[in-house]
Every structure is written in structure tokens, then in C-alpha cells.
Image 1: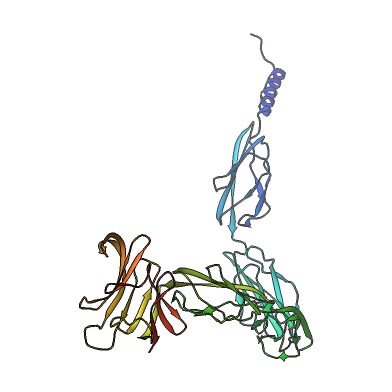
Image 2 (image 1 turned 30 degrees about the vertical axis):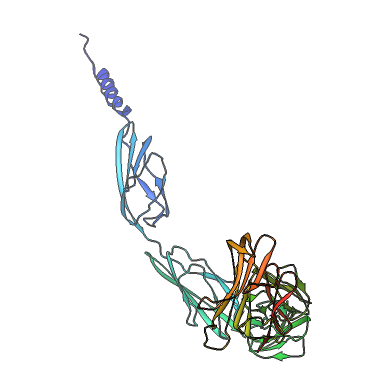
Length: 475
């Protein structure tokens, strides 16, 4: 083995010493922040000051991490957080931590006004420019307040008002105030009407919508005026009228006008008439229409009239619809009614006329005759005595009857009799298909079915061939 001399030993020791200088250094972790106290939702900047590191791991204390060298972070909740940075390099790892305080931001109240020189009844807009606030309270210095973010108000009085806004949040409160000068109102005239077209004499309601006025003057365009707030008015003549309203304010007067058209009223058709009447009865129609100058009546049976108050007689039974059309300059209107026409009744007390048939004791008539176009009719009469003739009846009865007249057998289809209430027959009329045998007792006096009619002031019973059978005068 070769023996080491002093020179070789020194070289060996130096080699061993210098070979230890090639080992990598351990990283030194360090960082700074642009602020150690921040507001909730405020951005925080982290400045990495680590040495001998090639990678980094950040923990922000709220569950969030980052591998960036110089990250930023925002905290959403207030509190104290510990931020930890771990720096890693060839020489190993090193960590450092620091605390940061996150607080709620302090609000800063501020606002803008649409105008600082307003008038009574002006609408003033307030624009809230506060920051870091969650609620607001406005005091307008006239008794009005608001919690809206951007309110609008109207001052009703004149003066100088100090408007104050208090902005609040969990971070505290802040107040801002500004002065508004409110002067007398500017009068602005306005009104509405319940109708702009009306009839002569019809009432019109005028509603005042003016503002800023202390008095009013209405001119209705027909020579009349009013100082009422909400007047009513009517016009006596047709035409177009200009209605003018002057709203009188402290400093000036405002005027507005509208047109009102007055027209002739439309007719209102109406009439009265009885609901029932008899065939041949004279019916009076009472015209109660208004606003009409001409009339047209339709009586429902083909007859018409242009009279104002006509009369009419119906010749047949039935229900008829009566129509009145009333016309005027304002237009037309129609009214209808129905009337029930029944069989005629002749009332009165009747005495057998002088010279009338008197071959037998024929009673006088009293009470009524009921006449119809059907196969039955009757008349009640009374001779005014108590001898059994009272309440006798004149009747026609249809049917088939067998009879032997003057030795000839005839099949009859009807008969007419007059008898009292004891059954005593005064008059008999027997009817076949073409021939009627009228008898008083056994005397033939006529042909066919007799009729009962009013002729002038007399009640006349005639046969169908026109021959008078009996005549009665009204008692």
C-alpha cells in the first residue's frame, strides 16, 4: 500500500470538505398581504416572499386553497381566518401562517335629488347612491318617511326641508342629508265630464282634477258660470258648447277647455191600454210618449193609425200585439203591449119594443147578452116580476134532434130555445142543414139561426134572412 504523505492528506481532506457544499438548501416560506383586516367580499392580495421554493400550497382558512404563487382571495363571511403557505423546493418544504380579520363593511350613505328647488305638488325623485348598506330610512322633514331604496314624494307645503337618509348594515350606520327648497304650487287646470254628449235638459257632472289652485272659475259656454269645485250643469238648447275651467293659483292661472255636444233627446215611446176588451168594443189608446212629433200604431190585426191617441175596435176574439213607434228629431222608439179580445157582452135592461111580435107573453130582457161566433150563446133576462119568468135564458144548442113538424119527420142539427127557470118554453127554433123552423108555440116565424145585435139604441133579434124577429128598447 502506498504511503500517504502530508500533501496527499491535505488534498483528500479538502475534497471531502468541498464535496459537502453540493447539497440543496431548505426553502424558506414567507408571504405578505395588502391588508390584515378586510371587509366581507373584499379582494385580498397575497404576496409570496418565499425563497428556495419551486411550488406553493395556500390554505385560506375557509376551506379554499390555491397553488398560485401570488393568489387573491375573497371571504364571504366575517371572522378571523388563518392563512397558511407551504413552500416546496429541492431542499424540502417549509410552512408559515398568518391571521387575517374579515369584518362587515361600514355603509356610506349618499343620494341624489331630481331637483333641489321644487314646487308644492311636484313629484321629486330620490336616487340612493349609498354603498355597503342593506336597509334605508328616509326622513323628509314634513312628517313623511320611507324605507324604499329610491323613493319619490310630493311636498304639500311651502318651505325649506332637510331630507335625511340613514343607510344601515351589519357593519354599522351612516347618514347623509340635503336641503330642498319648496315654493308655491304652479296651478295646472284639468277636469273630466261624465258624458261629452248629452240631451237637452240632461244633467252633466263636471269633476275638477286641477292641482295647485286656490280657486276655480267655470264658463259653460251658454252664458252661465260657476265657482264650485265640481259643478253640475244642463243645457236648454242643442248645439256644441265650449266649457272652460280656469284654475287660479298663487302666482298664475291655468286654463283648459273641452267641447260638450247637446242633442235633441230621443223619443221615449209609451202608452196605456186596457189588457182585455170585447169584440166590437171601442178601445181608447192613451199615448204617454215624450220627445216625439209623430206616431205610428200597429194594432196587430192588420189595422194601423197615425193619430196620437187613436181608438180601435176588434172584430174577432184573440190576443193581439199592439206596437207604437214614436218618432222625433232625436230618433225613434218603440213600445209594445198585448190585449186579449173576448166575446162581446151587451149590458142593460131591455123592454119589448112597441109593435114587436106580441103573439105570446114575451118577457122583457134584463142583465146581459153574451154573443159569440161559436155554437153556443145565451142571454139572461128578467121581466121584473115574480111569476116564474124571472131568469129565463135564450140559448142555442148544437146536436142532433129528431122532431115531427106538421106531419113531416125531420132530423135536426140544432135548436134555439127561450125558457124560464121552471122549464116553460117561450120560443123554439129548430135547425136542419138548410132550414130553420122558428115557432112561438106552433107558429113558424123565421128561417135559419137568429142573431142578437145592437142597432142604434135597440137590441134586435133577427133571422139570417134579415127579418126582425124581436125588438127591444133599452129601459
